[in-house]
Amino acid sequence: MTADRNRIDKEKDSLKDLNSKVEKLLSLSQGAEDKIALISGKVGELEEMEQRLLGLNIMSEDVKVKIDNLRKESDSINQVGQQIAELKFLLKEIDKRRESME
Image (cartoon, rainbow, N blue to C red; front, side, top):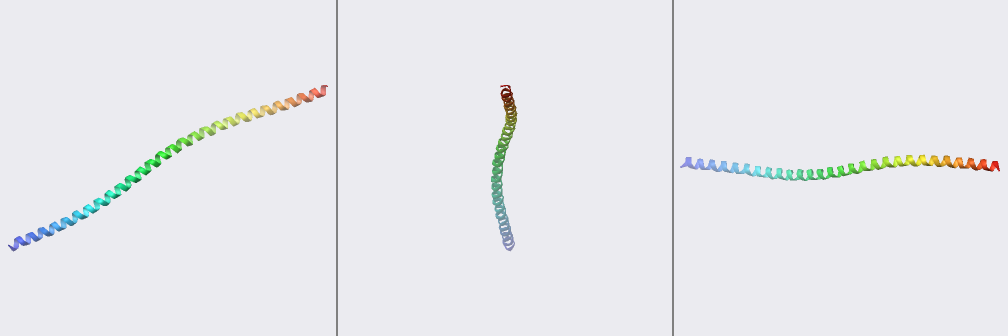
């Protein structure tokens, strides 16, 4: 009977130890789940930031194209301005010659 009692006590101790290990494992598992949830949230934030950056890159490219177009227009306007200045000069010269002919 003592041998049975000793065996039962050992089994109880083994069960208590096993139960303790299961509790620790469950605790670790919950901690891991919390960390996984946190990481998943961060991944979602990163994906959102990536989409925003993609949108900003597209807008940046649009701005570059518009700036290039404005530079081309500015060059054209400068050329027209030079031509107008030349025409004004020529008109003044014509007026001077007319006056001198009179």
